[in-house]
Each structure stands twice: as C-alpha cells, then as structure tokens.
Length: 270
Ligand SMILES: Cc1cc2nc3c(=O)[nH]c(=O)nc-3n(C[C@H](O)[C@H](O)[C@H](O)COP(=O)(O)OP(=O)(O)OC[C@H]3O[C@@H](n4cnc5c(N)ncnc54)[C@H](O)[C@@H]3O)c2cc1C
Ligand code: FES
Image 1 (tube, rainbow, N blue to C red):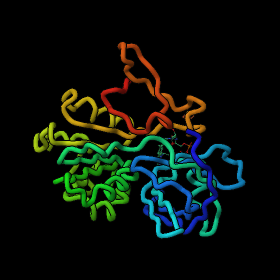
Image 2 (cartoon, rainbow, N blue to C red; image 1 turned 90 degrees about the vertical axis):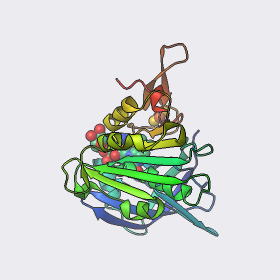
Image 3 (cartoon, protein in one colour; image 1 turned 60 degrees about the vertical axis):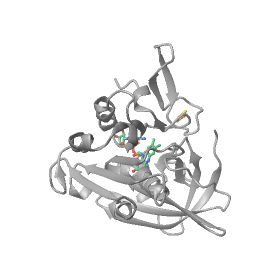
Image 4 (cartoon, helix red, strand yellow; image 1 turned 120 degrees about the horizontal axis):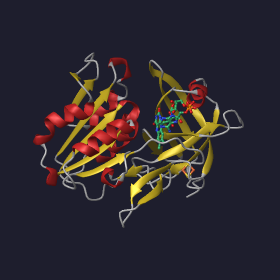
C-alpha cells in the first residue's frame, strides 16, 4: 500500500476560521478518485523541514476531463500544518494518495447518522456528498459538534447534503449545548439500530464514548481514527492501534493501511 506520489499545485489556500483553512490542490489526471474516508500524506515539495508528510483527509474531490483537484479542510495545530497554512497559490506540494481504506458504503441501512467532532467533519463531508441521491437511503442526519462556535467549520457544504443537521457546542455558544456524543445519546431512541448506519470521526475520547454507548453489535457503525503517522503507507507501524484479536488476545492494526476506518467494537480503547 505504498500509494502513488504526485506533485500537486495549490490552487487556493484560504482561512476558514480561526486556525482553520481550506486548501485546493490540482493533482495529476491519474490521481485515483478517493473513496470517502481515504486520506493523503501531504508535504511541501522539495522542503525537508518538517521531514515527514502530514495526513489529511480528502474533504472533496472533483474531476472534470483532465482536471482533477482535491480539497482539504485543516486545522493548523503544529509545525507541519502551520507551514501548510502559509502556502500560496501556485506552490507545489508532494501528495501521496489516496491512502487507507475508506468507509464501507456498499450495504448501508436506510437511516444514516454521521457524527463529527471538530475537524472530524472533513472525511464525513466527502461521505455526505457521495451519499446524496442514493435511493436506498431514506434519511441522513449529521451531528456536528465542536468546543465552541468558532471551531464549527465546514458546515455550509455539509448542509446541502444532509436532511437534518444538529449542531452542538461544548460551551453552548452555537446550537445545542453539550458534547456531540451526549446530544446523540439523547436522540438515539429515534433511530432503530437495525435500520441505522453510523459513521463518526473526531477525537479519540469522542469515538470511545460513542463506542461505549452503542448497544453491542446492534447498530452498523464505522469510525475513522486519527493517529500520528510517519510513513502513512503501512511500513513503519508508527500508527498501530490495539484491537481485539480473534482469540481474545490483543492484536495490532495500522491506522494508515488497515484503517483509518474501523468497527469501534474491534478497538481496545484503553
Ligand atoms: C487519517 C488522518 C486524517 C486526518 N485528516 C485531517 C484533516 O482532514 N484535517 C485536519 O486538520 N487534520 C487531520 N488529521 C490530523 C493531522 O494529520 C494532524 O493535525 C497533523 O498531522 C499535525 O501535524 P503538525 O505538524 O501540524 O502538528 P504536530 O506538531 O505534529 O502536533 C501538534 C498537535 O497535534 C497532535 N497531532 C499530531 N498529529 C496528529 C494526528 N495525526 N491526529 C491527531 N492529533 C495529532 C499532536 O499530538 C500535538 O498535540 C488527520 C489525521 C489522520 C491520521
Ligand atoms: S504510519 Fe507507518 S505504518 Fe502507519
């Protein structure tokens, strides 16, 4: 799973809010159309500082004839993402992808619930767009949570593709007040487990809370994990997470190559 490395050209890189940015990168026509939930490893072409690429989810992808572009929504949290935030139109980036196994969408149940914590909205937006117009899906509900109002990003586009949007913030500065998992827990009885597929992305504590509140094995649930990554292609084991092995023993899976999407019931959350 080494992926394919391309040189992409930054078409735009704009602020999306405090510390949040949209970036659109033109990629080679050969760049494979990503499955929702897949990501790329991105770095500035020719710059070895920071040495390692950073993983970013595909927020949106478009292809028109020979023109292909990938859009990212990212938060500048440290050195690598701050350097990305300074890129100008025309800058060149090294982009390896699409990588990882995305969301399984072949056997969806009729109600789809997406739960996004903060920047976790990025891969779920691409999923929302892909689900739009699917006849087998009768309702799509997005729960989008963040610490506070200014950290609620990427919802304009998401709104177009979901039937119902439930916004919440930890401090109550926008939407319902409370953790997104708590807000979902209050609404959970509206969704019959056997009719509902859940997709979630957000911080580990949020995904763990979600996993613990779901009745065992009743909902079809997939979560996308965000781990620190070095190679992004399965070679270094730097992103290993503990899972429950078949015989009850702990086994390890690479988030980059075996994920980033997992069944939360499989994960050893401690
Ligand atoms: C599959 C995948 C998809 C991702 N998609 C997106 C996305 O679409 N948008 C986005 O903004 N971010 C995304 N991330 C997280 C992003 O990769 C990290 O924020 C980034 O690598 C941090 O690099 P840095 O050099 O800026 O920060 P660093 O200086 O390396 O770290 C700054 C802080 O961020 C934390 N951090 C570093 N790497 C990660 C990580 N991989 N996950 C969570 N916390 C991390 C560190 O512990 C530290 O607290 C994704 C991560 C993964 C694994
Ligand atoms: S980051 Fe190297 S194996 Fe996943």
